[in-house]
Length: 189
Length: 193
Image (cartoon, rainbow over all chains, first blue to last red; front, top):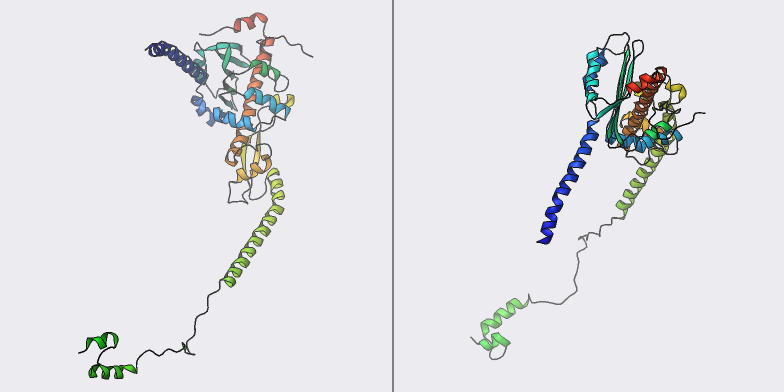
């Protein structure tokens, strides 16, 4: 009888844990932006880059990355734990091939409360670059980059715990800039 | 009829019985050795040894032929690897896949490039892309299944390109942020929603 009452008292705790886990999973999945609505631009683009790497492919690619190669080892560390990487980039011959409505289809998804805009640089001449992040607690669960130029539209969506410190270590190697989020100040040579 | 005589030849014999005995006595059993007629040919026991020898010879010949063919194919395989790396030759087709290179400072400032992998159709029994890629990449992806290997190579290339593009755009954001005023930077780093 006593054990039964103990079990009953644990039930809400288990339920809460399950709800918490489900929320975390949903948050991780929520970092995925729908990019398929940009597919129609591919017909007009002179160059299209379409990368769709889901969790399974990330794991396969992770296994294919060499730990002996210095550069690949760095990438391997960053890729570890990622749930997906999605990129759509269109380059056009002439300006005006895509409309602000096309950009808005992506931007509207990043206006949700889960996303934080980290950087937004707009220029009439050079277009705009926006960097968004999704945070779950202290951990980053998603990254989105939206770059709009006259003849180019690029959207990058990385899902999963992007380690900014590891990402910042790629600076100079992959051109990953310091975004001012790093805990320790870095001195440049 | 004296039944004793019929039973054990004791008592007075019956003349009719005696007569019958005399008539049938010519046919009674005469012990003599068995005579086998000469014309009768007894079949000899069948031997499987020659058949086995023939079978073994055929098997050895097949084994030798197989080994020879394998040696021949091993001799020709290095040239096929070279072909997969070379430029397009007659009979080959091109397929665009993203560049597999790790980006460096020089490549970062360039647009994402595409590299062509030639598919050799000479070995038509297998998937040509799998064949060509696996030969080149086999040592690195040793832990992967053959069907996963091709997928892994493409995924890795795409991954590298995606990261390169992501870092390129982040770099662009940083450069533009640095060009902007500090006040502008602070203004732009706020939570939306």
